[in-house]
Length: 530
Image (cartoon, rainbow, N blue to C red; front, side):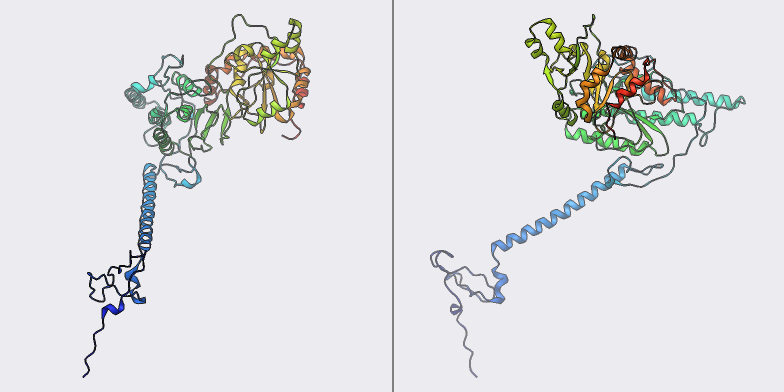
């Protein structure tokens, strides 16, 4: 038998070239197929079946990266599922309740059942406010929510217990004891309990504004109305009030975590307490609406909306007010025909006015006028808009007969109602549609106190001013004085209270001697198809 010659391992090795393994030294052993002499640094020549043993470091790094990315995706997916489960747990099924009316369409949720439908009647359930007798908001640092928050739970419990005892006594004496509701509770009690639950649930959603919003720090209409609402009696015929300070939630300068906490609290409140088969109302001051909170309202919530940038399904325009301005005593002479205090010029309507009208600074007119007669003629020229920017804007408006108050970010502006408080006839310039207050007040129209003009007709403004006779100017100025109360916090709050109670509001307005004059003026302020 032939003895098989053992193969020489050194015949199957090679030296590493210079620059690869380092100065011609042999590569280190990698294969497990032969016993190698490590001292000699021998290694088998790479062959096809040995490729897995010679994977490069780049390939190993790529495998590690792919593995890391895979596990990262799994972690992100599990985290998102956990976040969605938290949202579902925060929104339990309630009567007639879905999340879609309050959130973006991706957060669609389910309806539930449970809250009974109650009928209104003519008997009133009087809710005695816990803050009855407290003073209204006066000053920027006053907190209108403080009287109700301090001892709310104890007072509400005592009042509810007293009403239950009175009802039981009436039933024992043979009286009707009030209309029956669901189970043993009347409609009055259901309304009372629901309103008190909402009042307590929103206690953390009524912060005071801690920043400067349009040169003002408050109080706002939400604050003032809440103080007024606490001091009057309410009945089951009214819609449920949602007492949230929307402007403070949107405009306060707080960190992102606090804003996220507020938004989550608002969302939880809406989903838990607002039912689609009941009527509610709330008051909103912010010109941007609920855009910063990324929320929306269903049609069963009536919004008394001051800013007008957002169109809610059910809303009523109210004046956009910040503070209460008073004319100086004694008042200056109104020697300026048409003025402007436009400061923020980035909005489209205001840019258009700057393009088609002639604006001249008040200081330039006073400097260039040689005599008093020349100054007077320049100030009453309808083709020149006397412009001023500065802290003394109130003095200019007190001297003005007309003043420009175009829309800004919202569909109205603060200047529009500052002009009303100061007795200047506001010239409201709008684009898509006019957003004017008190549309349901008997006997009142914006033409009784101001001018409304579409931006496409702004170039005709000098003609419009010239066409208004002195008698009509005096009538509008007189109405500004007569109706000033309705353009303050107190007047707006009274209007809202009357509206939710079903009471009609009427203004004592002086009407024009020539009704056709108003129609002719309207014809030149609006385009043919608006």
